[in-house]
Image (cartoon, rainbow, N blue to C red):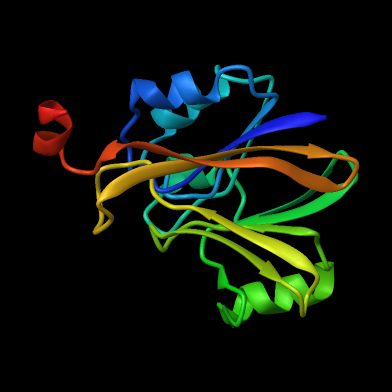
Length: 173
């Protein structure tokens, strides 16, 4: 069994609650829009394995180390991750083509800042978007996902709220 922490759209903001909630994970995945290469360094120290993809706001510092697409297998489950992907029935054209060709069991993306957990019976996969863990954007609550993969199955999936998006709301908490 592999324990995964999944986040996206940090936009350069690292909240210590991220470290708290991702402790004891085996892998940390980031679905793009890191905002800085420093954030990558902070995340890589939290788990033995780190996987990420660059997002539309990421500069060359991030694009030099993180690919546009990750395609890998964890405990018998094929995973495809990219930043701009959409969701079942509304995939971005490039994502739809990628998913049709790769046929993964799990599709991970970010970009929308909207937490989504949706099965896609047509393609036979589970689509995950962890929402946004950063402060930039229109989302009200910063979120991430935690789950396990065992023998090709996603187990113990949990959405975690990190707190309100804005600094003033965060300080009032």
